[in-house]
Length: 280
Image (cartoon, rainbow, N blue to C red):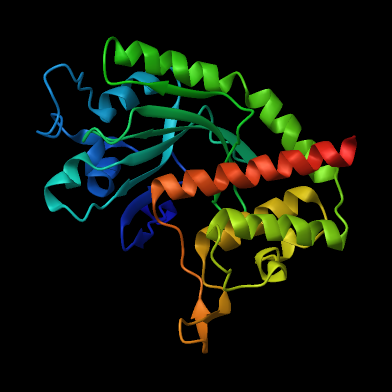
């Protein structure tokens, strides 16, 4: 089994993904935060503490399995065991299909976040997971009351959106963009990534596909090229320094969980907006 596991360690993230569901031993080795036995000592008595692994056990019994897990590696070492983490759950392996719908769970035990659940989609060709945008169900469960039950319900609430998610993807695959429309998409994607700062790369670089299968003019391929290029970084560009000189630069990968989810959702929302314009 181990040869299927892909581990990428960014400077500030530890992650593990597999073609088969991840067992507890594998999870423990790579993402210890989900096993934290008690809340970080900064939390009050009222904070209901449920180790994420208990949630994993519960959803496994319901037939949902983790295929991917990542945790932040905080600067503050004593929070390592309580760091923010993200799990992606699937009902079946989705093998033989080009995509699989997922429930994505984000949590931390140091009080920095409630449990958050989103609908997501994994493309097997690149193992990058898209997180669906604003129009899809998002569930937040605070650390109080009957957390376990609320989270199980949340998983099902998010999963109710799966058919709509798949339909959305099929429509994007059939939607062709002109070169100009692709450029507009890329420009908006760069704003989502760099905000007001000047982007170090050109729009056409962002939508340049990284593999043969992704060559094409569809909205779906454009979205995926942009997502992968932004998340993985490594594009060569140039930046202007404060004293006005031009320096070569390479774009950075996105390792932070919140930033990853944020960019993903922005791109998804952008793609759905474009879809609506095209079909109007």
